[in-house]
View 1 (cartoon, rainbow, N blue to C red):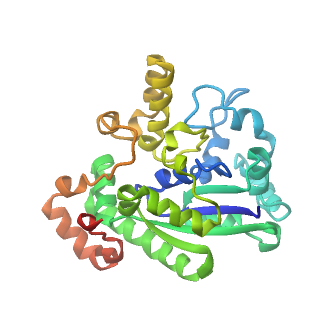
View 2 (cartoon, rainbow, N blue to C red):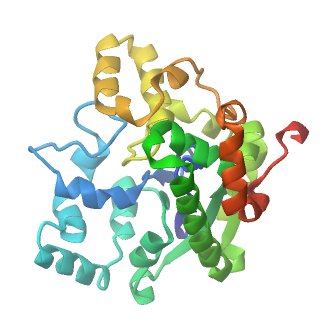
Length: 310
């Protein structure tokens, strides 16, 4: 099969981690998570078996055994200006995704880094990515849900600043999407994915040229080695592994590391199956809705999905 990198683009809290994990549960696909966070990871590495994966407890089979920390440091260390220059030059010789193909032994890689800047940088220059097809999936979610989610996590920032940030990101992503080759791009709405997972994933599989596998939808049962990504969604994998191992200690360790990054109570009360999260409809105050509409209402129209008809 032709080597492919599937780039998931979207704002924060848009559902990209969920889609990443589901696609990454295909037998021919390896899911990276938000690979852009590798820069931060390389900056903070400690010990002989540093923690890179946010899913595995302790030493990770992929990042600590199959991958090469020497290669990752070469491409993504920014500890000095020289390190950063070497990494940039290295991409002009050999595309870094080629190492992921080699280490994972999978022909398709998913990167949910979301940011257009990242995807441009990892595929520049064009000649260094020879033999790799780049696909783009624009993960869309109602902006009101996204802003409400950020407000829940960062109330001190206020609705105006968060909405302006969402608007800026969307304008940048819309431009990138418009310029991307039409046969290599597709939009996926979080709301549709959550209410019709099979139909959505069948369409995604058809788009990227792999056969749909029904077990993909039970992403929590598969092997994953994510870098960063939504902690609540990744938590479902850890939760399933806990149930299998009946390990309360694993739960305490994971929660201690990631508890500040997601709504503990909400995710702990959820089952493992994919479910639509529309908390914004009861949490987003009317005055905040008015502010959002005045700043980004028109831009948000294409993101709105009538979930009652799905």
